[in-house]
Image 1: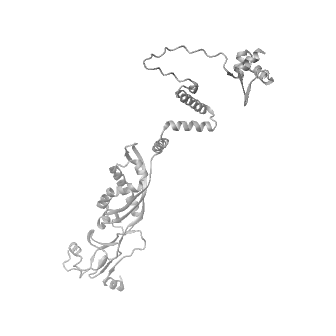
Image 2 (image 1 turned 30 degrees about the vertical axis):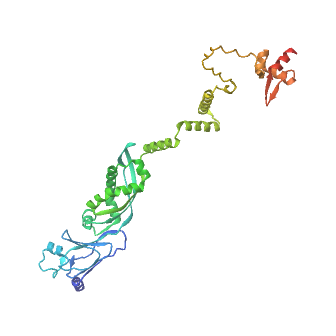
Image 3 (image 1 turned 45 degrees about the vertical axis):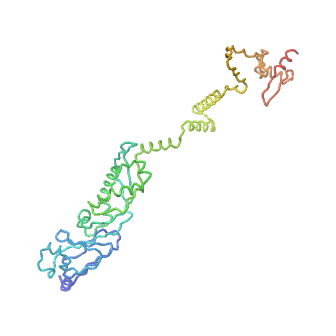
Length: 364
């Protein structure tokens, strides 16, 4: 040791530290001989706490301000050292600066799926990730459990150290809150706020840190659970299954209705239409039927009669009907109509023949 170094070591010290990195959690003030002089000046800035450590034991803690280190304001260090004569002779100690400001935007995530018990899907494996904000509220506990004797403990080291612990706390809090998977996936911010009262007491008691916010950005489940959720969403969106089937059949007919599916759709639609028509009053010919007579009071209803046989020759016939009556082919009837020998009325591409016209043709 040179003369100048010896002289510097005997001068009154100024102990202070400023953080230029913005990612430092704790910093041990560099002092090669670990000897703090009587009357040394300690400067602690806002968002900092100075923690003294002597021979591996915690001493006094200093908040923001300027302090002149004498026997009166460091009684704990004096007791630990057992020094009867105060600071007239240097003693050895470490000074740790701990940053107490809020550290924001820290990422967390599950490296492996966590097991959750869900009321709807049973036991589900889920992955989750998000961000959180935290600050140090118990410097001694933080230095003891997290930072240790690291000279310069940074945020990236904290993330590596605490990631698995945070995930474990998240899993335990989520299980304790009994929040369904569907609610977790749809209300991230509410779930994060609900988990804070469950996580903070543990982190404060174990690690000396407190979470200001705990945000869940995404929760993913295995593909089979996603399919089940999609099916449930589809069923809820469909609503009335009968209306959905009718809509699907209409869509199939609009696009040609090809294949067995299209044929089945057409058959189903036809049967449904026929059923609706039969359910109408009187069936298909309901509008042409005479309404049944209402019996007078005291008069017994008439006995049921046998239905009359249908007429052999209807009043209005098609060429096929006329061909059956005449005992010829339909082509012969059409040819006769075209010549004009048989009188008929052509509606569009179809012929209609009255009974009177057919009688007149037979008489001629």
